[in-house]
Image (tube, rainbow, N blue to C red; front, side, top):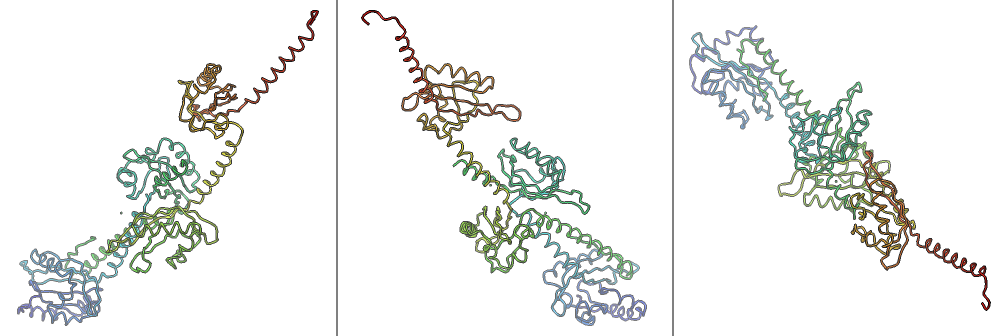
Length: 605
């Protein structure tokens, strides 16, 4: 503030006291803000400040009038340079000043104020002084900051999940309404491409999965039942990416469908592992430019600004709510996991879905950081803890299927996947974020399928016959392209299944020379017409013996009538043929003997 006193300022101050009669004094000193008048100097003097200053700042007006430096000294150090610069620009241009900045009260507490001022001019346009208004906006700032932090927290929670979070319309094309940024990492398509092309999901379905997946999609759209399915999508580079897709249908208060909300997990690696096991997974600012003499207009402008701020707060609340809904209504448990439970500054979060999954409320689950460990199935504990320690040590993703114990004691199978979100100052893993999905139904189905597979395998491999599956070869009837051959092959013909499967031409050298043309001709006819194969013939076993086989096979077709494979059985009928040979020999001997007895005898015989 200007330390040089001017006689005209003193005269003005004396005249001001006389001018402000009871009416104007009451009007100025009862508004919920501080009114002030500053001189028009590069370092201005405070010529007047209303009594509300003591309530707002903890200093009586006299302190500001007596100490020209007090206001600048109490302005927050980080805001002081920009406030000075904006005041200098306003004085240079003769334009209104409006800014929000922090001020330290007499008791040390920090508050936010909105400072608005306009120049008051003489008749010739010369600026005589500045008239301003100070308003405490601390509550609004706190609310705004809290909403922004909440929005950022839930946005980060959704967008850092190691999965694609989405909302799609309940229509035939499964039109995407929202998708998290992980879709780009998973499939190579940008978020804009995913949102701009309504039917992109349908277009990217793997041809082998399209029809059953679309049929299931239509069925769930019709019934509204929760969606859970595994299928492949084609990535931008041509790769087939496996996803486990879980979603629930959100409805409005009247029960009308709004959108499907779900999560897609990339289970390509898990699928690869499963395949190996089967064969050997998102400033508000308003300028106040009005004379403070027109206080009613100033109040109206402040009301407009407050309304605008409330609109912004509503937008922030809506955004925060959207990400909260996404995080907390997913058909899976989302969580934030801290490597060091004693790190009180680390975030810790478990979504309310934990109660639906395991029967425990969030409060029960978060009472003890090690509570999760106590719910591990005893048979899985060592495996899970080993994987957890490895991720905590190296920072590599955590991905495991294991069992947890429900509050009521029953077993729940889960797929648990987490990625590293943050490292500490030393570079060590600090915070992981993940998602836990209930896969109990799939595991139960797999167990039943394995049991059924074992039962039928035993039936196939214990009958006294060779069972086989053969690929149709209509252009090469002398070949036998086997894809399965039961173990009885070794016992009946001496060759292992692997030896015959590896050589499609084995028919040519195994068939008995006297039967070869007949069998190959019949095979060619059956291949061409698709009629059942039924034939008895001889083969040369590995030890050189002749084995009679009775082979029967039927052509299996798909739903469109296209041949898929021959399924057949070959029975060893050598004993039957030996018996028939013996019967023929006995009959021949009998006829010979009978013939001798009935023939005339010559003398001397």
